[in-house]
Length: 150
Image (cartoon, rainbow, N blue to C red; front, top):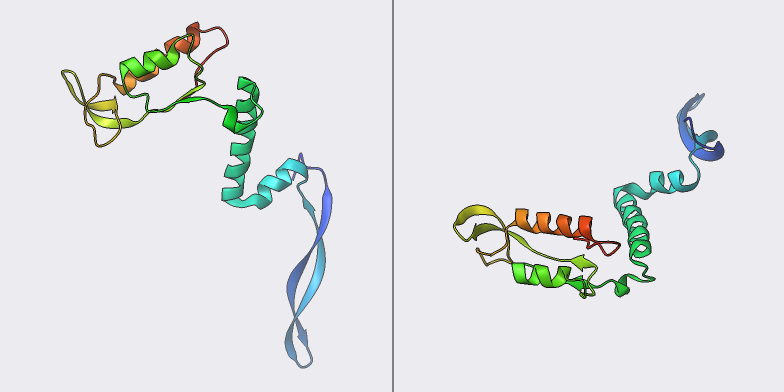
C-alpha cells in the first residue's frame, strides 16, 4: 500500500478454533493499514458514491470557471437544436454559459441517415451534430474568456 499514510485500524476476523468440545468460531482484532483522507473516502464510497464525489469535484471547477457561487446561477440555452438558436446562444450579448441540445437520427436538407440536432419525435433539422460541435468549438477557440459548455 505504497503512497498511503499508515493508519492502523482494527477489524474483526472470524477464526475457527478447535476446542475439546469441537469447532467454535472466535473473533479476533487484527490491525491493518488503511488509506487516509480523500483516498479513504473514495475507497469506502462504492461506485455510486465515487460518481457523486466526481460530480461534486466537477461542479466545483465549473462554478469556479464561470464565477458562480451556486449551480442555480448557471444560465442555459435550452433546446439549441437549430442554426438560428445556436447562433443566438453564441452571440456576444447572450448571457448563456451552457448549451443544451438533443441529438437524434434523421435528415438535414439533402443529407439522410445522420446525427442531427432535434428533439424526438422530430426527424429533420437544419443543424447536424457535426456542424453543432464544429461551430461550438470554433466559437470557444475564438472567444476571449466567454466560452460555452455543452
